[in-house]
Amino acid sequence: MKQWMCMNCGWVYDQALGDPMGDIAPGTAWEDVSEDWKCPDCGSLKAEFEMVEI
Image (cartoon, rainbow, N blue to C red; front, side, top):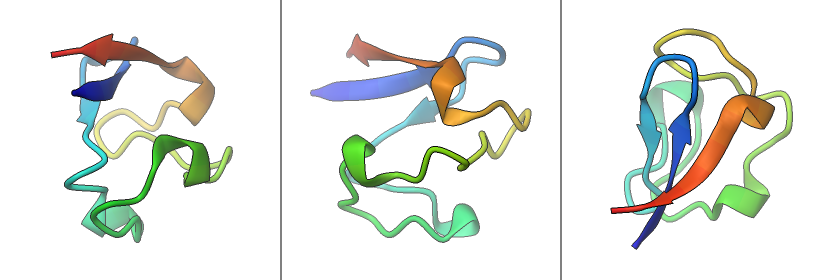
């Protein structure tokens, strides 16, 4: 499964889980996450994430 990791702190965005604290519903595709969304742990922008396969 593809996931996206913050290159600054290592937090992982999992499409199945979304980011409830950031108002991103579970099941939200990475492509549908707003460009101004920020990492819930360190505040990095979406551009600082890279796709990883776990």
